[in-house]
Length: 204
DNA sequence: TGCCCGATTAACT
DNA sequence: GTTAATCGGGCAA
Image (cartoon, rainbow, N blue to C red; front, side):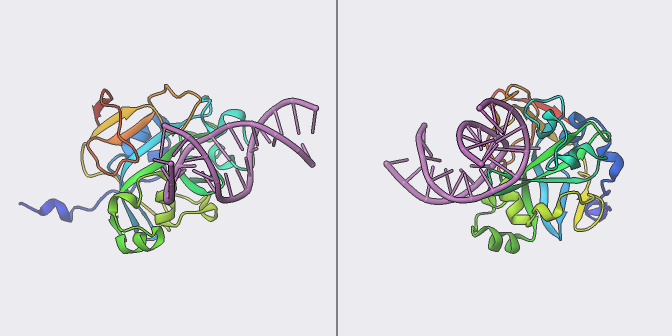
């Protein structure tokens, strides 16, 4: 029956979803829906980090700031970036792996007027295209560091079907800059930056 | 304690 | 293309 699918219940992402390799979870988050207090949209760009990765906050061991990364999967790790912005991560793998996915961009679908007010811009493309912008639009701060991802104010829903995921090098880092651990929704206009023209596309 | 630098962004030239 | 804003972590002294 045409249109039936729109009534299908979207599956919520649970802790077990995050208890896998960060390099599996990251591409599987592309196309998923993130809501924070009812405001959010479809994830279109993420990056993977791991404690063996020189670019990761957890690379030099546990500190007060990154402690959440060393805990169990399925929790939010929020940190201050450049003393100005907040950045949101999802902790993955097993406790001690200190692996997390940085949430870099989403396509806004819920709470657009709220996001516009918080961000001070009207263009939808500028609301959540970048980790700092996204946290400002969703009003994610240090107060949410350590919160479970399967309970309010978070709501996470699995993507409804397969998507084309584009894979490329991460942005804004100097260490391990060659690692292709940035994942995006192929063709999305809500990416924080385009992927290289030669970037690989995979179906997930 | 002091210094350097960063998983960024917006406003410049 | 370049740069200021702004501050905590990490490391040298």
